[in-house]
Amino acid sequence: MLDAARALLFSPMAGALTMERIAAEARVSKATLYRHFPTLESVVQAVVQEEREAMLAAIGAAGAGAAQELGARLTAFGVRLIVFLASPGHLALHRALAAQPALRGWMGPLIWREGILATEARLAEMLAEGGRVEARREARALLGAWQGNWLLGLLLDACPPPDGAEVAAIAREGVQMVLGQVLAAAS
Image (cartoon, rainbow, N blue to C red; front, side, top):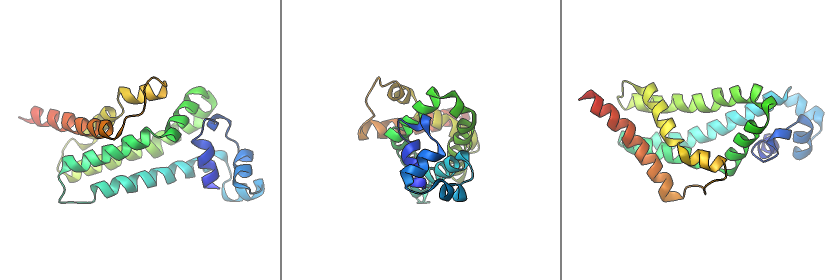
């Protein structure tokens, strides 16, 4: 059922997401769907949490090597995040939220809390583990750097997704900018 909900949520038809459509896509009865998920919000929350866990697991693998330099771990984190942000499903969800005010009322805060803030917290944790005293502020700055103009260009269909080299450069430059600014300010 979550696979069906995910397929619909991360599609151009996310704005028309209903329990009926999820049940039909999952090929289960509405009663079965409602037994597992009492509301549409609970289904979406489960999908968002599952996506977050998958992304954080991939990002966590990047940060798992304690011996690895903080800058390299952060860059690997950034690459995985940028690849996720540039994915067609992620873009479709953002477009649906932009086009459907009714969705934003409940889905926007859910995605903000379970996706963006949770990712920021994990990034701040990595920074703190690396000895950074301004970890939360640096995490916000990195997320901002990694979600630059290229993401807006993608959402507007104004540019192609970044290729592998561009993704690596965006991630690396964000890390250099944030860590470099903090180092310069400390001296």
